[in-house]
Length: 300
Image (cartoon, rainbow, N blue to C red; front, side, top):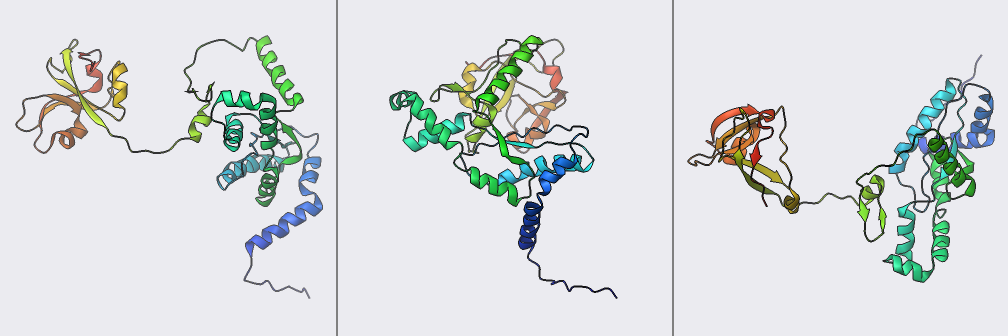
């Protein structure tokens, strides 16, 4: 007769997870899984490494879940999926963290402190929380090789980047051009979109409505000289460099005026009553594309 062990209905799921992790550690499950797939078709996975000069948070879990799911699934499908971890040691966040610690507010102060000494502090900073990252990776069950990680400040890694750049050059895949990018005058460097987003926050700004008088309609344009384009902006200081008004080609606009007013403005039909009040008079309807090339008086 088969025997059964009673299962306690009051289970601690965190405790069960710890038991699974312990079994994986003792059995070297991740390492064995990699060995089992050697020689099979390769499925490439590149770890976009974190910077360990800051503690990991709950927001880091989401990206690591995806970094684990896809390689794990491909391994289950029979592919050889090496998963080499790494540490990002470059970038403005590293410098800013060290500047904050040293009370530095300008590049001149870095030179006074000593560039070599400052770089040494940056090198120390990038590995400050490696232990915290290791614990997070293991605790969430993320299978990745952190025993021999690649480190972006190592000479071997830097030389591999130069090799890649030379390869692109040899294959005629590099070109010189122009691109508008954010620039930080205090840091003295261009900023990546990621670095710009680091300081992003929602703010409440005043907005203004501006009337732009029509000077000369083009062709069969439904607007008339003397009408006013009614535009809205939350950045009135940009009006100095104003160059054009954007209109939605498929949006319906109207020539309208407030009740009892003879002044005609051009607004989106959906906003006419909201802007001009109840009883607004609609004189004409047309698509935004019909106003193309219409000339108006600029604000300055």
